[in-house]
Amino acid sequence: MTVTVSMTLNGQAVAHAIEERTLLVTYIRDLCRLTGTHIGCDTSQCGACTVHLDGKAVKSCNVLALQAEGAHVTTIEGLVSSDGTLHPMQEAFKTHHGLQCGYCTPGMVMSAVHLLKIIEQPTEEQIRDQLDGNLCRCTGYHNIIKAVKEASKIMAKQA
Amino acid sequence: MYSFKYKKPVSISDAQACLAKGSESKLLAGGQSLTAAMKLRLSSPKELIDLSAIAELSGIKIGNGEVTIGAMTRHADVASSASLRTHIPGLANLAGGIADRMVRSMGTLGGSLANNDPAADYPAATLGLGASIVTNERQIKADDFFLGMFETALRTNEIITSVIFPVPTRSAYAKFKHPASRYATIGVFVAEFNGVVRVAVTGAALVVFRFTELEKVLSQRFSSESIAEIKIDESGLNSDLNADAAYRSHLITRMAMQAVDSLQA
Image 1 (cartoon, rainbow over the protein chains, first blue to last red):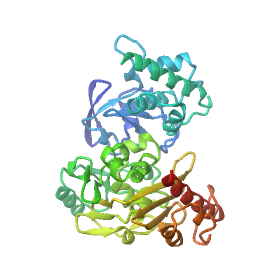
Image 2 (image 1 turned 90 degrees about the vertical axis):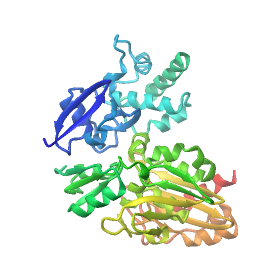
Image 3 (image 1 turned 135 degrees about the horizontal axis):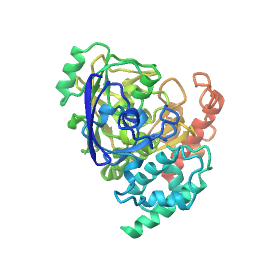
Image 4 (image 1 turned 30 degrees about the vertical axis):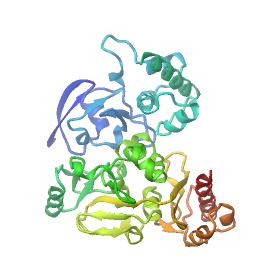
């Protein structure tokens, strides 16, 4: 434990002493005890570790905690409002059964939320293409696509 | 990964000083190749020098017939740059197809070129456009930059600061993606400069290369039919799990045709 890292995590200021080699996903899960972010492949292919770093989706297993120094990090736990209301993307995943085992789901949701920031009303083809960094072994992706499409409609109405 | 020391310089001269002082130190750009390699213990530098705090290393500048992109500019920002799309849409499209959106949030132009993965996308655009790699010491022409697998003309402690891309008449990139990694099993970048065509191929061999036979034919007649029967010699092409050399040779021609066709529309 040789350096201190600090960041804003889901709106809260956090700081810990860490080794320089600590990955962001390890920082989030082991030190901050937010275990919604998952380690799937650990080789930056599956996307189960996806979080937002200053508003952009990143694979936290392939980012050093130190690279998030002073940044705003949002994890899946940070999508829920303070009063417990689910994010429209989470609601849509529920409605359309966009998960089975749930292991890829936090990464899928975080990735999809970022996608809708870039493309507000993506076509099905765009959703399939843009979620190519998130792998799911259970669902065959159909319901995930439906959920993202639904969320894009809900969020457009809310805008 | 093994332990290392970490430095975060705030200027290029600061970074130079860190490199000069350190031993077995490596520059950290986006980390999308380096961090992954270090996790697998394929790379174990004793010190990482993080370039992300050096603001002057990022940005896209439109010049006279050329676009200069800072070495730390993230793939996502290159892909979404309206001004780049106006001048070199082929380059913006290439950046938008690198890996996946999360990797594009972090990965950088300079990191990609310095690493020179044989299946990386940026080397194809850089060689295809005949760009110049600007370092803290000199400018290196693309034709002289890519030496071998993971090997470039960069000297020890030399830092890429930006890349100058000449604006072509038109250009396009066609890529046959590996389904999981989204690396280029084959990627072909075609650029035309007033009738003179350059064709750069990545993913096929140990290093990006120019397909000179296609360049000659396309410079005479820019159409996919004119190159449909031209295949590169298989010897010298990679054979691996994803594709054997014969298939790669076939894919090179097909991807070149796709790139040309996309410019005819």
